[in-house]
Amino acid sequence: MSARLRFIFALALFSVLLSALPVGALELQYGGLLPVPEYRPEVLSAYLTHPQRDDALLEAGLVIDAVDNNAVARYEYRWNGTSDGPALPAALTDPIVSYATIRPNSHYDLEVRAIDAHDNASDWFPVWSGTTPSPPRVIVAGDSIASGYTRQWFTGDSVCRDAELSYGRVLTAAVAEGLPPAWAPEYVNIAWAGAGSRDMLSGGSDSCGTRHEAQTDQIKDLADPKSWNVVVITAGINSTNWTDVIVGLTKDTALSFSAGGDRAACDLALHEKWNIGEKSDSITTHTRSTVEALTSQTNADIVWTGYHSITGTELAPFWAPIGNECASEMAEATDELHSALQAGLTSDVTWVAIDGDVATQSWAGWPHPSEQGHATIGLTIAEAIKG
Image 1 (cartoon, rainbow, N blue to C red):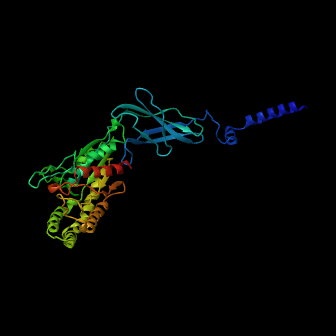
Image 2 (cartoon, rainbow, N blue to C red):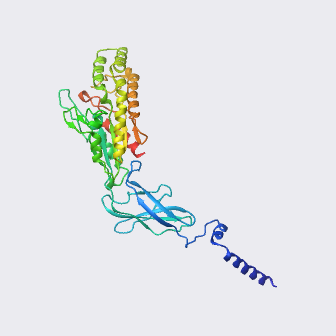
Image 3 (cartoon, rainbow, N blue to C red):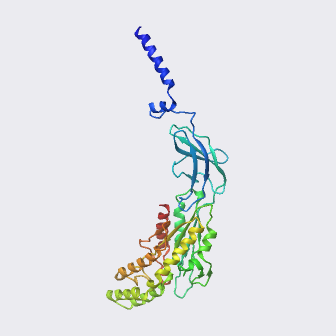
């Protein structure tokens, strides 16, 4: 037999043997990379969840049940408005969708498909049809630090709520910078001067004489369960006699005329006159109750802030009533308050420490933040929210 005939015979025999192998053997022979069009994945069910507190802004979860003869490698989704949208990637584990490419309060259909390791894709599966959520809402609650309290002269009236001055305005604007303009968050401020940790749950009257209902009840009404909500709270210090202690300390340091006298005044004020020791458990309890009320009845992402340091800030030009001589006592005092607050927080609440220098108002508004101080606080919180 000639060499040419032997070659043709061998090639024919190899072809017969190869065609007799099962598909799985073909895949194994070639590293599992051969496309097998007849084995396409199939999506059995899928649904879209409402925004949850652990979802990033404009994101929500997908729950998908899909099968394939081998394994599903990834998912894709698309939003369909007046026409079919582009296919967007979704992870195999804990897939999410983003609303960033579409508009709020608008009708869309959502579809998903499964793709296997050979790039075989299932048919598009209808997941959801309806009106998209409203833009996120930032709700600022708590006391005078959050409310934007101002007072210029000791003989003048106070402004117990100035939402435009409050850190909430800068915070909301900073969060909006990372979102499409159509999804710019709405900002609502319900904080009031004088609110303590108990008042978050029961309500009360502010220092201007206005009565307010419980802030937890207001938050429940404001938080949209179909959208994203961020609740930022500064509260706790008014549950102690802090204001009276600081007013008295300011008088004592003004009359001491020495660094040693200032230190002695601070030690007396913060270790003997301030009642944090007897109020600590109550602050923790009311903080915990506030968190439980909000986490059980809203989907809000909750942020609780600490208090800024007032050491070295000026009540009047060239007069800082609490100077560096009192720095260690003041740091110890705020740490004690912060510990009581943090003990009432759960793991899904974000604690934000305000560690930087915060500019304060002068005269009767001291030691509340000035416009610059509120901007510092707002930007600090925004960084924590954006991660």
